[in-house]
Length: 517
Image 1 (cartoon, one colour):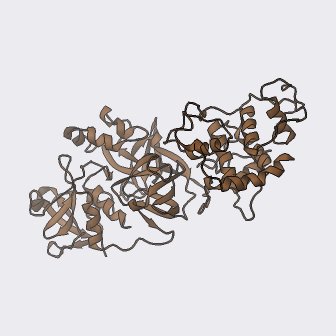
Image 2 (cartoon, one colour; image 1 turned 60 degrees about the horizontal axis):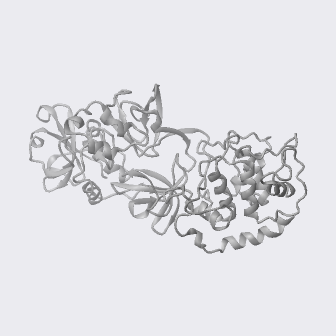
Image 3 (cartoon, helix red, strand yellow; image 1 turned 90 degrees about the vertical axis):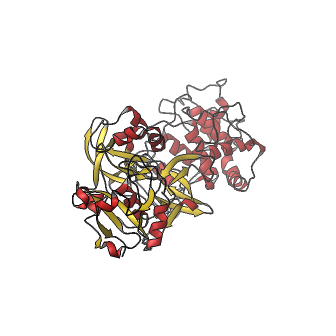
């Protein structure tokens, strides 16, 4: 057939092609610089697979019909549409718009009619049909030694099951984070175009470098920072940026007055970061009670408990547990859709941890738990190879990290680069260096090694209690040497450095603990 002659040469030409003038300026009216698949859709325009122009819409969100898909495939394969035999389908006769296109894909055995001899040109294409069509059109096969994977919603006896497996084996599609392929779901023109671009230009494919399918679903934070509340539906109108999806903790902390910040005391518990695994404990309407696994608390054996909007948590599979990891070391940084700052995805916080797929130049490619592949600036993260331990920090390492937050606004329950409370500050600083300490000051005061005031060393934690230091612990700071400490004091102030002799801290000092060994 014609496509067998042309296709190998087409692939070579595409791999070594240079960008055509079509990429200059805006190629589609509905594809801006922020669009995640901008490069793939522009590639289709460059190759003449789709019509483009600054005033031409690609139709990224439009469902694709069988006729639309046929036309794109004919152009992608550069098939000759002349002198094709009659397609022998009852709903497509000569004179029908797209007759030559449909006759071509049927003649090439790329697409066929149904048992009633209907082509249904205006019917929407499903993902299962798409898989079978693409494998036939481009004569794809599973590479030798390729990984196999069974999607939970794909029947092994389905007509599309072998084709779906081939697309997966060729890194053309990985389905969804919940291990589904959604075979009966229709797809958009953008999605169909992306798959064609990945087939024609392998650089667009995402290699599963450290993919190891997990057998059990887990729950992960789906926003930059989620705040845990003592009860469901406790948030005020002013708290909407914190409980919305996506959350906006920066806006939340900036919009509150001091009294509004003080109101949070006793209403919020802690925070969890993007991608962090949690345990779901209870549900109440649109809220769920979770436990943050990485935060030790005697309140719950599963982790620190509290209520969050259900939309902040998403089921997923921890399929990248054998990857290297990137931990954010900047107070705040951005995730990007690609290796360019022109396409930001989300601001993320200090201590956010993400699996690493690759490190190239100034960029780290990471896999998110719920949003696919993203990129982060290499300068803003520490990359730790799988199986390696974080280098044991010195006291100077701890202090250097702590001083990054000097001047940061206090936020009750805060554990992020957007705002910290006293124990959230000490917990977060130590966590950056691979040392997990309890979340709350009162519990931090009972762990580690007790230290006399006369034997303090930089990095030691200082505790302060009611009743002139003899009551319950209510505050923690970090000793930095020369009789000074750094701490996050209260809603009226920011992280600051001051003398331990300042009141009320001199009077309320109740002891010190060392977590460095």
